[in-house]
Amino acid sequence: MRRQAGFAYLMLVPGCILLLAFTFYPIFRGLPLAFTDYSVVDTTHWTGWANFKRAFADGNFGLALQHSLFYLIVVPVLQILSILMAILVNNKLRFITFFRVAYFVPVVTSMVAAAIAWKWVYEEQGILNYFLLKFGILDQPVSFMVETRLALYGVMFVTIWKGLGYYMMIYLAGLQSIPSELQEAARIDGANWWRTIWHITIPLLMPFVLLCSLLSMMGAIQVFDEVFVMHGPLGDPAYTTLTTSIYSYKVAFQDFEFGYAATLGLLVSLIVMVLSIFMFRYTRKGGLTYYE
Image 1: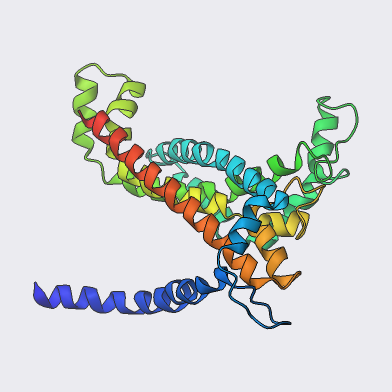
Image 2: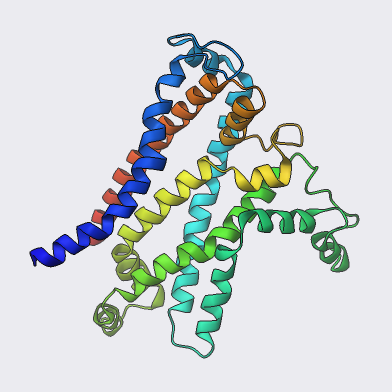
């Protein structure tokens, strides 16, 4: 037993080293920068809480934070669709392996490549407008990339499309860990498909729901790649796709205000922490309610 435990801890060492080197060390080094005016082109001075006061008065940061919080809409949509897809591919049907692989293909696709492809789809002369015009849904093409009311939703759809297969596989692993005897007993007691899913499957999936929801929430509020590739570093059009990560990038690598960028990153991290604690407590409470 001790030998097995020692081997398990040994396997954790590489991951812990990477975590320390690329996560905790940058956090440790970057935290003091939030209280300075650090810049590669000027002398660094200690500014105390000045950067935080500036952030609270920064209209662009407020707008970016608003968009990032609004982006959290993708979390419940992504989790519900992922659970439904996992339930679907958990059945023993012909060609089910093919469907599992097909659903997982977007996951292994580079986000940059996926964002460029969807950018072409959303173009005024793109394939989306072609089908919408062909089936009479639209009378004239829509500029999804330029329309301020639709731009952010278009990016959200890319995030959902890209993440479905990833979370589906996690939920599929959870479904396959549930004893089939529980579901069979529920059916014998007269429970239909929906009641079996709601009272047996979902409660037993709650640990997986918590994990996937946390990962999805952190990814949503810190979304960067798809926005940057599709709409650039300014969150075009007219700042409608400006998120906190995009704005932090602009402040750091275009304005060279690394101290202020560190402040913005710290504030976003605190928001993510608060949301994570709330989600953990709420999901855990929900799981206990289901079990009772």
